[in-house]
Length: 163
Image 1 (cartoon, rainbow, N blue to C red):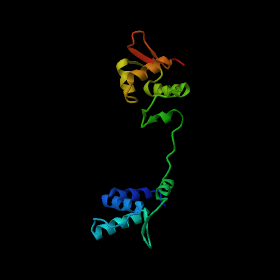
Image 2: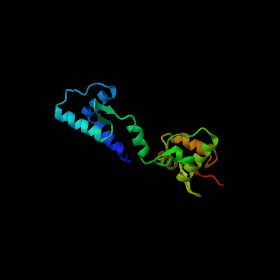
Image 3: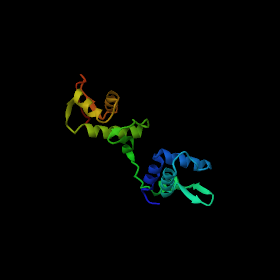
Image 4: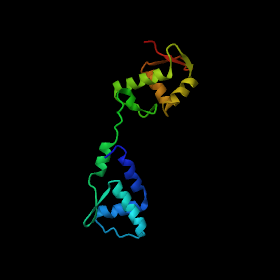
């Protein structure tokens, strides 16, 4: 099975007629349907071509391993590790509860949001954090609470904390 086999499977099952016939075959029911013979032949041909069913002496049989085989043949994308596993397309999906993970994620956020020596207003830090999370206030507070970002007493300016 090739790495794109899943496309043929989805294509065959995207068709209502194909799904109906496939369901009948999986349940062991007769293939007789309300479809015209031509449409039924096309649907059956698509199911066979996708590897979902095979023709037998008694009719048709559903392939017991087609989905497992398609998944095994699909290319594997490497899983993110470290703090990057908490981001999806550059946005923070969750703030981890484990202290070590939380600190590493916040370090990444701080470095993405501020440059060393840069001082920004609260509005600017909020704008930058909004590109990373939906809960800007909580993330800003977490950055300050962990000591990665410093805030002026008035709360109007923010900067990376000195190392």
